[in-house]
View (cartoon, helix red, strand yellow):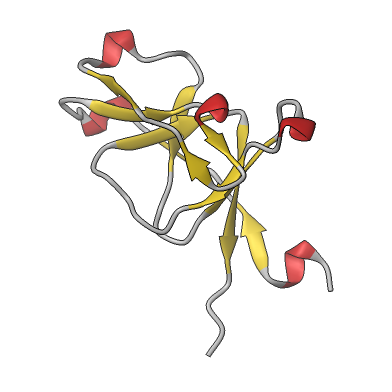
Length: 98
């Protein structure tokens, strides 16, 4: 079985026209072996790191493409408002099987 048989790789980027009032940001270094250390709370769009672009959804799988040997990966089983993750993550969206 291949990864493409159970999920798709997909990115859904934040658009400035969405005008969120604040952001919860997850960088690759804050997620290791499915253990979330912390989010960075960012008060305004102008303070966002340049890599803070991707929106995620419940049940997405994050896998860091930056230094994969450091095991920065995890499963989104809870979601908070206005969450963005680094473009250093590959986002895998599992198919829903019935």
